Length: 247
Image 1 (tube, rainbow, N blue to C red):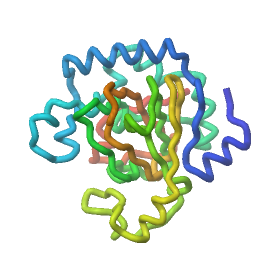
Image 2: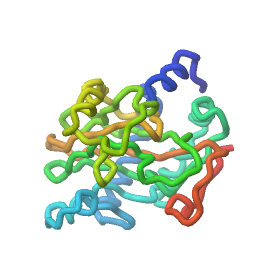
Image 3: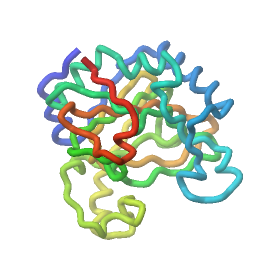
Image 4: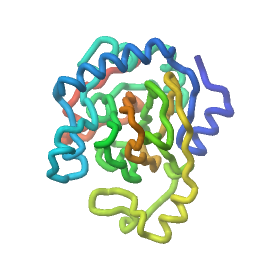
């Protein structure tokens, strides 16, 4: 499978690309059921809502935000991350061979009903350490995602925008209290997703998500690839985990 020129140009312009029905719903259901087992037994490594928001509250200590290191958790997860149909697409967008990184994302992402929190506007590259910015994340919806349960929102073209340091807070989140930023945020878009839909987005793209206000947990899968010429900076978290060339 390959992208047409319009799709490539759209990604270059907007910084993201939505592809409907990429993975069969049956496969999504299998992934989700395995993830539920790992969530039920809190199989490490995990990140809780408490760790993410920095609040010492029992509700959030017990609420899992993500299952880390998905690649090594189950062969079904690994097969999705090494999916052969998506490789030509990733190579087209990166302009070179794709390499799967396991240091970042590589996660089952959750928005649990009643105990999830919002994800603030940010660029993923804020906490990654690489020699370049040619990295793309692959977001897989495992069920319905919408404004009620915390669907992703994006600011088109923000991967090319230049901001001063004052545009971000001390945690590198894009500040919503700045008038200049509010004009940028006003351009945001989002799309309701179904199981099997994927969104590819650039590491510099500003994105966020609301808390889950529905009665059902939302479970998604995200992983990241880089162009093979992009190198992890030695001594950082980015260099401490294996990489898998997608040949």
